Length: 112
Image 1 (tube, helix red, strand yellow):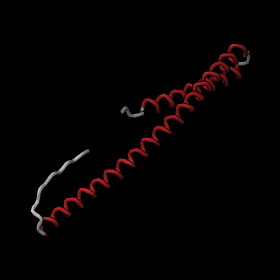
Image 2 (cartoon, helix red, strand yellow):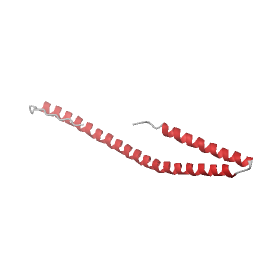
Image 3 (cartoon, helix red, strand yellow):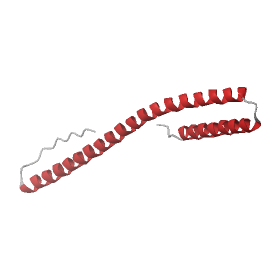
Image 4 (cartoon, helix red, strand yellow):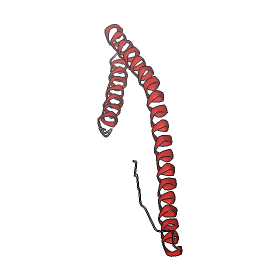
């Protein structure tokens, strides 16, 4: 924000006092604006760092889910024991529930 103020005053004591008060107030406003912008910049930097960390975690999670799905399918294709089949199905259900929870968390992220 830029504010240009051009005022011509007669140089008496009362006018100088008013001018100093106005300039002091404007200086305080600018200092506070600078502090707010610094805080905002830091918050945005933190958000970007967190997003990059999530990108790495997301790629790892996606690879893990894919590997687990392949393992589950392989186990389902090669098992003959009903108890094993139940354990495989439980693992598949757990994986599906975790994927749904992750998807819900991503969907709940506010849009800019």
